[in-house]
Amino acid sequence: MRLSILSLLFMLPLLLAGQKYDSPSRTDSVYVFVDAAPRFPGGDEEMYRYIEEQLFLQLSTPLLDRMNESGSYDCLVKFVVDRQGKISGAGMDNRSRDFYLSDDIIRIINNMPVWQPGKVQGEAVNTLVYLKLEIENGNSYPQIHYHPLYPDSAVWARKKMNKKQKRYAILAAILLTGLLFLFSSRGIP
Image (cartoon, rainbow, N blue to C red; front, side, top):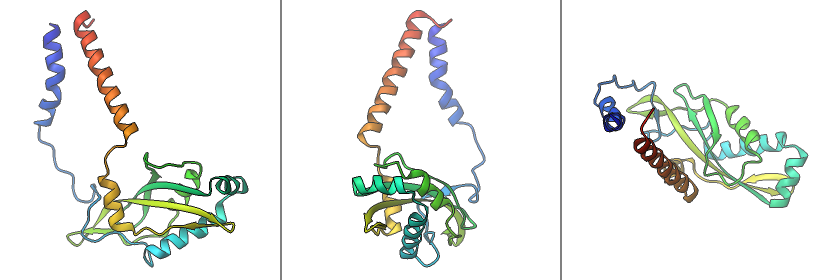
């Protein structure tokens, strides 16, 4: 009985994978690699200038003081540029080093003006974008080191898990295997 339940648990994903599903249309998919990359109005330099100005206007004194202590702030922001060019789903990637400005940066990214959307085969599509920000506090005005948006976005999308993420994945696999062994040896109620 136990063996049949365990084998069913292991076979269930294979059975579900064998079923046919309607493939999502291009309008529902989110692409990372596109033929024409999404563009901020005016290009990458204008985008960084916009972020610098918004940071200067929105940063509170305690955050600027904290930035003065560390001298810099590094983060990796990910967001989706939809088919209409609107920004949605902005958030910090878990590979970011600093998080104390994350709320302000996410607010700035979500309030960006409309972009030119990414295109695949001439059709506008939803595009996932990664934006690396290295901000330094220079003369009480935040300055951002310039990184071209593409191909950097594609490079960050391809990066593998860091050591901490690998440790958690291995730990989860060990715990799951231990639980399965425990249930199979004692019987599942």
